[in-house]
Image (cartoon, rainbow, N blue to C red; front, side, top):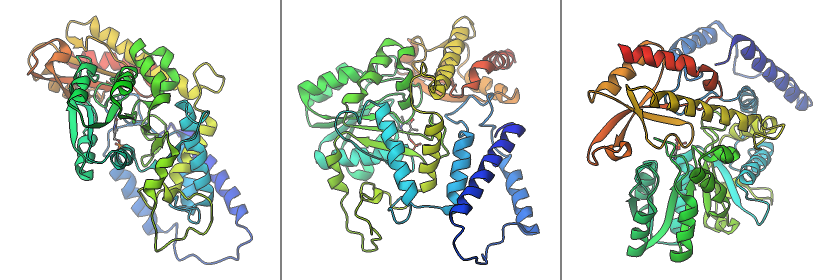
Length: 450
Ligand SMILES: *Cc1c(COP(=O)(O)O)cnc(C)c1O
């Protein structure tokens, strides 16, 4: 939610947009709609909706620093709401002509962010989220290398194990090093055993924001030959500020140009409402696997329909419109560019994470991960009894600071290998977190004293 002025402003944006949209359809004969927008009953229902929705953590506020949640940009909200009045379906051009074209443009901008598109083609589209985007990437992998293994690190998102089970693809987890990144020696052991078709490299793990060593993985590809799929659902946008990252993460983001497929979630770091993932394939030829004959075909134009390169059928055109609008306002360019406001926002969250890590390191009550945060996620353990993290988590809640909990292998903290450590975790993904860090720290300190 925005402050009151901002809320008025985005409603103003929407109202202006609606007016323009109506003008565009002004030549239609008038008709009486059976839907009534404003009635005492509708107002009563909306009052109930608003009151039910207050039963949420304040995800939009900087004091919410727990999970991967941040509000969509006001322009994304207004564009989504405007498009929703038309409710286009990006399954086919006939169902969403303008929004299909906008999806292709927005996806091409994302591909360009990864260094794709200048040389050679690519294929890509939006999905309902990262899970489905990864499913499509692994499905294409399995079509290219039937029966071969998919491997991902033990810190990869649990969705990879589940997706491969759904698709009937054999799966193996590869051990991580003590920073939560895929251990390339363990990967090479798996490659020597043979039958690996695809390696999933996670650039920004969900728990730690750890970045798998993509350049080293690509070097192994030279020797062993396999597909490389990058799951950058969370971390993908950090490519824009790779020079602000540690050396190993920077090199991984630099190497994205050379992979076979990429997943990124605009609904995580891309300021979009939920329902917006994206999958990209380097070789546009994989489109052949999607070929289908729809008996309901409303594919009346000869141009490419997104439903011909997507496993999902109906998809929200409004999601594409919101993304297109956001990227027009905040282009996917580096923080040094005059239009680089989006990248500067990412960099602010990153600085907040480094500042929190620094304060934790100086405080004997806490021990953060020895390696520090690779992106904007900070994880730390609490000295003393094993249930302390849970207690501090609850005390923070009582102080109005919302953090998260995560269980990690003890070796990440140079502790016992078999021990699982309950840790506190904070995702500092809003630009405002930088300014709010002193207040976040104050509340955490008060909670830890209790
Ligand atoms: C969030 C996430 C996913 C799952 O994406 P959804 O959009 O939640 O379906 C997959 N991989 C990584 C690394 C993620 O962070």
